[in-house]
Length: 177
Image (cartoon, rainbow, N blue to C red; front, side, top):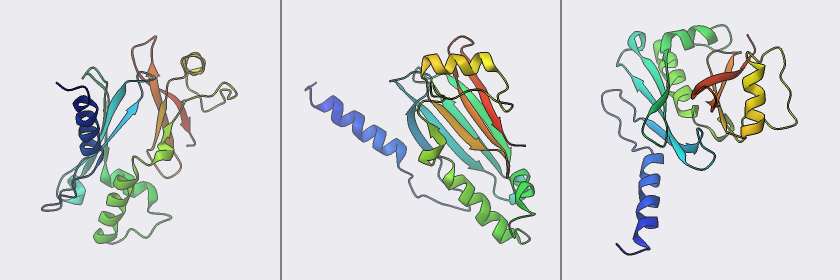
């Protein structure tokens, strides 16, 4: 194989993986995919979020991270109705149409750049009352691995990162219930 073909092929594959297809049928929305270093400082892992279900009451948001070696290292499911319940007091979500629009917007914003934290913890940051595991927090300071945050409710964000010592994804910060 010519030496220039491999970089071109890798670019094309990463572009295709990061670009939504825009394909929507019967209320289905295309999966969103992002490729970012997470369990390794250089090799990229695959972040994927899917919206499943055709009726609001049965809709779920599924979030997974698959490591560069192909092993799934994180999985979280959210019920769409739980997310709506967290916001009903501050956002007008009385009608199903506005609820559906809200869920689709939350889904689209899941992989915003600000949710990818590079690194997860800087050397100047210190653990506080929202840090569930100070040993892991300090491990992240030394490893300089990246983190990711997502909202699990109106006022609650979960911060996750890869623990080299535990060989799994762990929560390193959980704010503010």
